[in-house]
Length: 116
Image (cartoon, rainbow, N blue to C red; front, side):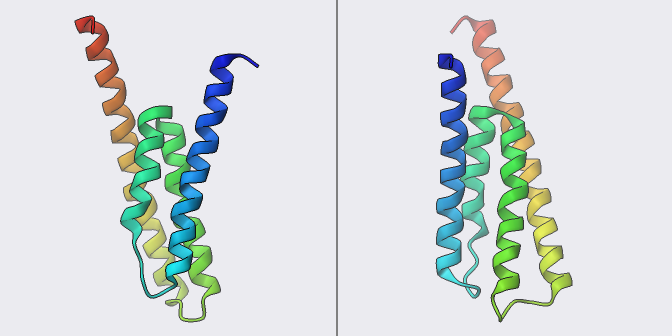
């Protein structure tokens, strides 16, 4: 395996681990405490370093897994409300992933053009 492939694999494992930590904390806090702003960290970092695809993957996965938690807890909101909340989170996180990856790409281009 080449060094580039190894680095990419390590990054993927890092994004999954970071998302797992965020989801673990979310699960431990239970259904009454929601802290969706923590979902920003893995989405933004993965989009910045690995590009739009991984940012969008995490933007989809995190709210859907959170929805799974909410449905498992007995005090969950009605299903249409939970689905609406998940859809809003997915839309916002996916848009953020696109913006962050585009900003990272533009910054790299500017550095290349400036010779930095």
